[in-house]
Length: 171
Image (tube, rainbow, N blue to C red):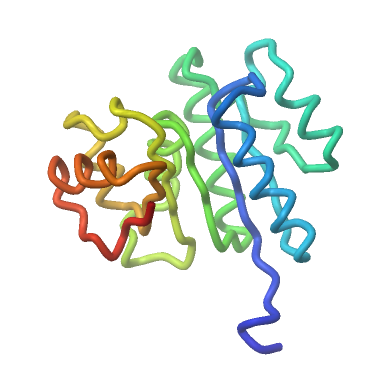
């Protein structure tokens, strides 16, 4: 099979239980890739009440039901999430698309250094908080292959605060 025809295994993570602004484009990306024949799985916040899981199911998108992926989780649940998500990686995950700091941090812990793995990690930067200089963010950003921004000002802010190369960013 040629590289062009290979089907990818993609994990889209979103530490939210709600179908809100950030969820909509991720669902669109997931549906598009799924229609192209790629295997798409979502990891979302299943610990809190919300309508995102139902919306994903209505669109026939697969959810990993054994993770909580909640910012409200305690340490044991977070460790369990890391172990479950690490098994996803070990099963041959090609791309992990993280949307929030919580799921991005878990992805960074599961994947390790970006130069020593087969899984690509991409982070969506949606707002100023994600581009602000914060101690743990540098750890996660160093392990990230690419960043997607809604505007150039966020791209420039993140590049300035973390020294991320332009070739790893796109608007």
